[in-house]
Image (cartoon, rainbow, N blue to C red; front, side):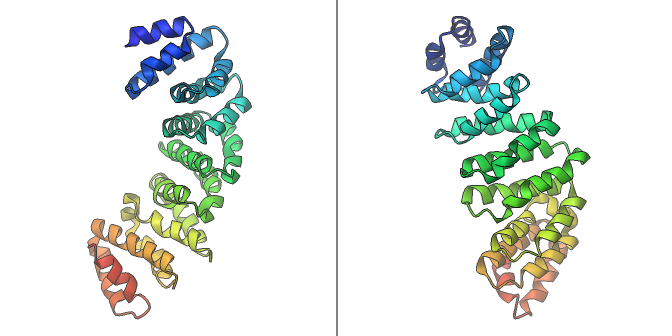
Length: 280
């Protein structure tokens, strides 16, 4: 397969290359992206090649365009970010995933330059693009560079009120949870601040951040926030608190079970406690 891929790339036969890749392994697509990047770089046509592939009708070639984004960025930063934004909203999931991956790699590798360029994605009309930003944040946080903590938290903060299902699943339980893992003290401070909101979506995200494994390392502190949120009368909020309590309870039953026992005796929290205990 790799020999066929090499021949198609050497001959500039993109349609032939697509036939080899459609329905094939992800590893073959990644290999093709690497070889295509090498050849395009030698010819000084990286960004041009990415743009041409991004406009192709064949989804696997648009996927290659997205994967080329990481390599094309140094030659044409703004053009590449615009290209990745478009591909992040592609109708095909593999293309969107590749665009998210390349954006994450760029945010991780060149944080100071890329962060302000992708910040407008927070306000994009497409939930796919907003989701791609969150996926990039998770990747950029994975090594826990301290200087990124505050900028990453500021980057995702305005999205806490976003009610789109795709975005909210990638936010509190995923992106905020990832930041809680890497930057526990600072992220907890932000969670305290965010918990003062009256927006039920913001509060949902705060509660769902404590469903993550990282929360078990700060279970007692997590309860400070969850006690407060458990008094919210809106089902959407207190159900998120219940989810956090049962997941936290599975990891730290010594701390959570006594708390839930007290909630069972509290008229204002009894419903939350029952919902949590149903899964413990």
